[in-house]
Length: 118
Image (tube, rainbow, N blue to C red; front, side, top):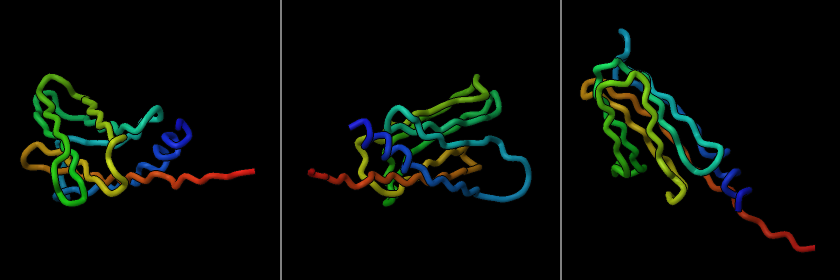
């Protein structure tokens, strides 16, 4: 079971980031990091001290699966999403402050299990 989870985690992330507009400094930066000890994904956000952000996980159909509001007071925040129960497919992590939007695509792939008999 651990091998299956580890293999699925290794195959978890193909991240591409897109930005809602080009030019000028960005008000925040986000990075997607898969966890090595289970099927979890960390979203690390670096932002201004007084900025308020919303981090959301969406499925391929655009349905919101989870959200996390990031308040004032921290310049770096980490949000962890547990994706162990989600089916294989493409998911989108959206980070926004209301005017600037950053999207990161996450692909969840579980390896096919095989049975070998001697």
